[in-house]
Length: 281
Image (tube, rainbow, N blue to C red; front, side, top):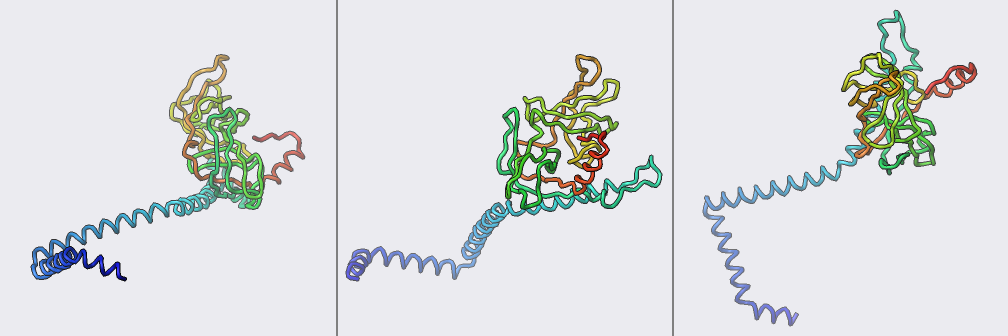
């Protein structure tokens, strides 16, 4: 207390000056309309800027929750689109309508990417959902833009996905414009590009044609985008096209994926294995 009194005593001139300065400013802005308006508008301006900055920080911090909500909504919409596509009437087949259970056989589970590689010859992705969430090896995985791969193994809370950027993985595909069937496989070099094989050179293939999953898949619904034709040539054997695709999925920025659970897969496989002569990719 004594030290405080000593400090005030030593600095009494400065303290008095500060008090008088504050009082003079208060009288100046209180009893003069123009300075008062300027002061009011200025303080409002900076207060508005501070509030805007605060709101921006809050919005940025909420982006993770927003992205999760959007990914969950996309999962629901994917299931709905798959069901509606399966129920569409094929105009070339009179009175055809898919069985309701078949039409709704695909269920989508949203998952977040925890780790991935793109520079290896065999690339994998780790996601944050596992057997506790109903996932199992062999299930297909897509992004909001296209095919990603299929699950290789699961623990209770995580799964490892074989990326389409894998030397031994291929996907049954078709060219959307003419329904020509082929296989899509990665060549092991460019992580943005894959190759489509087994397409006859006598079929018309154009640049920018869309390539999608075919109807002959265990794990993917038909018409999931794989990529877009960026190069068309002829193989050295002169029988098939040499087709290069730009992948629809950007693996460099991949954050969320959708795991596809074909609820009728075991029934279909059991029947086909019983017949012994049906093979599906």
